[in-house]
View 1 (cartoon, helix red, strand yellow):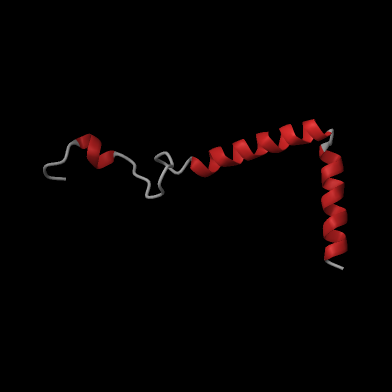
View 2 (cartoon, helix red, strand yellow):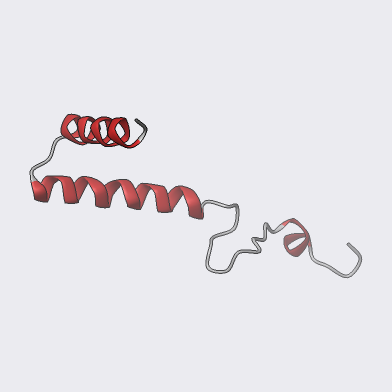
Length: 64
């Protein structure tokens, strides 16, 4: 701590390149992904229940 300012010693750092300090990059990516998926669903005219049913049918047939 000797020779460092208070700001430098308490500043949060992130080792991953391009992510904000504090590890919020994953959360923001998740929000963007959800928004993109919802926009694609709206464009294709799909509902959430149709997508859930498709996943149930898909994994049901794959796991048999």
